Amino acid sequence: MKNIFIFIHRHFNFLLFAGLQIFSIYLVVSYSKYHEAAFSELSNEYTGAINTKYYNLQKYFYLKNTNDSLIKANELLYNKLKSNYAIPDSLGKSFIDTMRLDSVAQFKKYEFIATRIVSNSISSQSNYLVLDKGTNDQLKVGMGVVDHNKSVIGIITEITDKYSVVMSLLHKDSHISGKLTKGGQTGTLSWDGSEVNAITLNNIPKSSKIFKGDTIISSGFSTALPKGMTIGYVDKLYKDPSSNYLKIKFLSAANFYNLQYAYVIRNFEQDGIQAALDKIKKQP
Amino acid sequence: MNGIIKNILRFSLLILTQVYVLDNIRLHQMATPYVYFIFILWLPFKINRSVLMLLSFLLGYTLDGFRHNPGFHAAACVLMAYLRPFLINLLITQESSDTSYEEPSIKSMGGLLPYIVYAGSLILIHNVWLFALEAWQFVDIGYFLIKTIVSTLISLVLLLIIELLFSRKQKFRTNAA
Image (cartoon, rainbow over all chains, first blue to last red; front, side, top):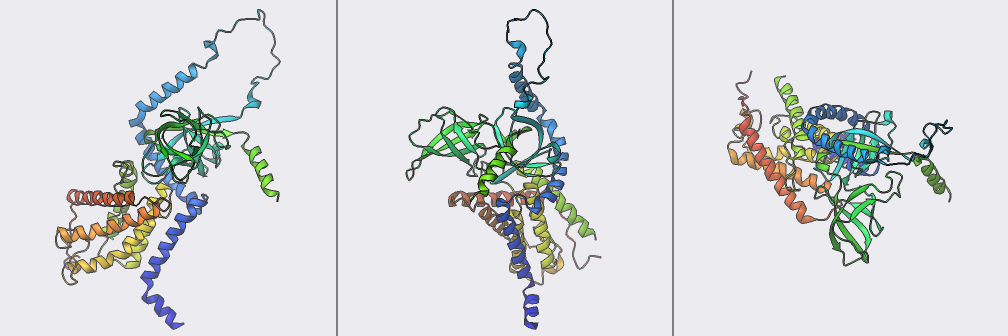
């Protein structure tokens, strides 16, 4: 017994070193798998608050870009206005409408929630964004996030009441499914960690004809993102001689260098689909 | 007491600079310039080794908090702190600078070369460990090596610039009140 104490006393520094090192590596390993680590709750509250302060200062420098993006978004919306379409006036007299006030509300599938991005990293191999809304604004883990042009940014992986952390497309563990608009083939996205805005699409059969500039959209197979959100544009093709699949390098539609605002997509069917999936899992 | 306040200020300023200035810079998709570990390099010679490691862990953990990736920088910083005393013992003769100066600097290490060896090897250790942990799934050795070397050189240049900009007044321990 005495020898153990002497041993601990003599090698205390090494034991402390080993302990801290193992704890750090445990954090690294466990965090990539289970995102609801005890770490996130506390540290997100603090860093989120500091990030918001910094963001308020920084946003003045981006006002021009923000303005441009808003003008573009406005243009898109103006073009969808009903008044732009000449609808023949078929009813000369007025009548009382018996329909509900908002007749399509019950069929609504998705809702877009506008948020500000208070922090955005691009420099490491696993990048995250922080949004200034959380569970207080009905956000949930697993919701998709797009930018003002409906280009995919990522998926929410952690949440507190005021902030939510988004795993960006530029993350080595991010595997969103993408689809080519022309051929309709679907594949999985992955990022190799080297170049910002350049992502890879895997598992596309070699037989498919793909050209530079083809659009890649979200497949809509997950509850996170609706079908048809732009992900990127094909840049280069690589043929892997050992398999039947192509590797496609593409440029992301969202520019991760200067993101300012983001829209979180709330899927009203998410709970229903999840319940159905859980049911299947329970069956032996 | 003065030293503690100085180090707390250093800690927070270095973390804020790292997160809000240097993390936004990415040179040729290769390297992020790191300077936050200067805090570890500049801690006093006479600091307790356990305290040194715990402080380094705290530093790394704080940066991890901002980057939402717990563990990476904490691990690298702890390794750096564990190896620091060995390097100092190797580079400085016991009776000269070690006893008369408080913190490692160009002057107290006895010239530019020992200081660069001291800082350079610790930064290299930090980068190797950090990028190895980050690159666990990737097997691109060439990219890893270039990234490590380029990052280390950039950090060293930044460290020397910081040394020139903020000249630290080195007190003789023997004369210190």
